[in-house]
Amino acid sequence: MGNKTPLFETHKAMSGRVVDFGGWDMPVNYGSQVDEHHKVRTDAGMFDVSHMTIVDVTGPQAKAFLQTLLANDVAKIESAPGKALYTGMLNEAGGVIDDLIVYYMGDWYRTVVNCATREKDLAWMNKVAADFDVALTEQPQLAMVAVQGPNAIAKTQQVLPKAAELIGGLKVFQGAAYGDWFIARTGYTGEDGLEVMVPATEVVGFWQALAEAGVQPCGLGARDTLRLEAGMNLYGADMDESVSPLEANMAWTIAWEPAERNFIGRAALTEQKAAGVKRKLVGLVLEEKGVLRGHQKVIVEGCDETGEVTSGTFSPTLGYSIAMARVPVEVGDTCLVEMRNKQVPVKVVKPSFVRNGKKIF
Amino acid sequence: MSEIRKELKYMSSHEWARIEDDGTVTVGISDHAQEALGDVVYVETPEVGSTVNAGEEAGVVESVKAASDIFSPITGEVIAVNEALEDAPETVNSSPYDDGWFYKVKPADLTELDDALDADGYAAACEDE
Image (cartoon, rainbow over all chains, first blue to last red; front, top):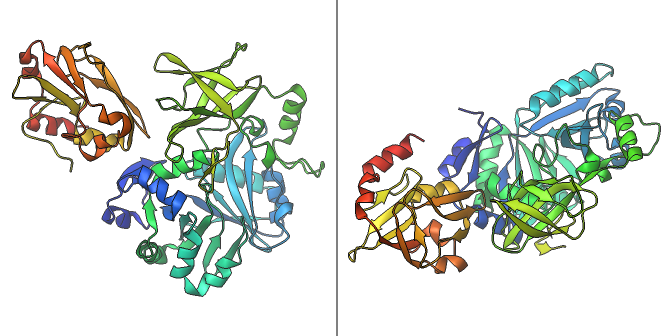
């Protein structure tokens, strides 16, 4: 018996097929994950992401704390309340403890971290926080629903008429408080949409209203194929504590300037850059029959070192298999993947496949 | 609850076998198996004219989630494969016992199926998983 979100009974009632996910009983699909995937690419779908951990950072040194804790710089989002930033949280060796989103809330910050890493994240954040005048407060009373797809915003506005104007005014990667709700234009699918933090007591009503407005309930299965098509990393698959952000397509999330900001992991990353980064995260495309899967071996011509598929799946939008893989930087336009005792040639592309419903490589 | 048909024989690895009136045997995967696999995207069937052996790998079914070997419930020559699965692999999900069959065999020895599970035995095997 795992942890249950406030929507657990609702998922059961909507014939969600429940599986264990990082200690949580979560729906993997409600019938067909491929149908759910297409609904998000063409209309609107919703995901229960209440298992994710929300931690608020308050206190006079909240900013200084986060500027030490995170590889990206929260100074970038001070221009307006509600702005969001994607970042890695690194250890001293430059490995990724977790990836997270941080929202600027005026004089405090809200972070959303992964559920499977909750305990080690909190332990690390609290350890670093000991040197700062800050308070870290989990928000377990908040549930979270991601509404994603080209019609997601319009349908959410229809369900929340009083918040329609506020929602309409949100820029991409920006959120706003709505009473004790928090609505942000963020997501993990490569489509436009919202992530809505809502008190657990109100989330069932919100979910049901969205369903009545024609928003498709989607499980973790579709969430994974959508994020992989969008080229978004999954913690624990595409990177972990043994992996540098420089080898995980996360270089863009490292704020090197200002040079005097001494975030945790900076020294290690600086050394890695000086020594030359040996591996990188790329996208793979297999247009033939077969599905690329995590942990398959990748062979790069002229390299003794091999690479590995970090995430692989069948892409419902493209109709063939795609993957992310960490490979030697010498990789060219093609490489070989060892699949079921055969070496299969695949194309190498940037690790981003679909945005707003369209192929982008 | 997934459907388990009374008239079929089953393997604990989730293939079913149906003895047809003409003595040939049709093979597919169970409703329970397709449900566990989720959306099927590719099916690799054996070639017509090839020989499959009971308990040995005869093909592969790949879903979005996982790849799974198909083990033949019976030895014999493959006399037909379901070519419709090439373009519509999702038929395995929608009709695992009818339109979603995999291949047909001219069996070498029908008594091989005496060791297979009946519907009750298969239901019990699924329960134990």
